[in-house]
Length: 129
Image (cartoon, rainbow, N blue to C red; front, side, top):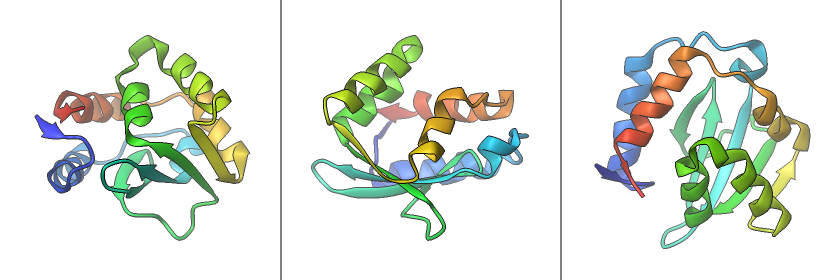
């Protein structure tokens, strides 16, 4: 297990990204680039691009999600309740969106491919929250 958002975690995610190869995503996910600014013990930046997680912000992202590390961890661990946890966090101000809100809303209706589901399961399985 690797501590969530640690340098070792980002290294492990990069390896899993490479091993996953093409995720065969639908266009609305394949073309989506969103930055995340995460606050906590150490502020962290990452981005979602082509269905994968990368360290740092991406200069072409049109949206940034601002969230604390505990809330993000709860959303990731949420299983079938992920959407409910995210909506509640947004409504209570624990999530703030800067930029194009429609890009973030695309995440709610996007249908991940089996390859992307497998990648995210592998990331979740090796992560200590």
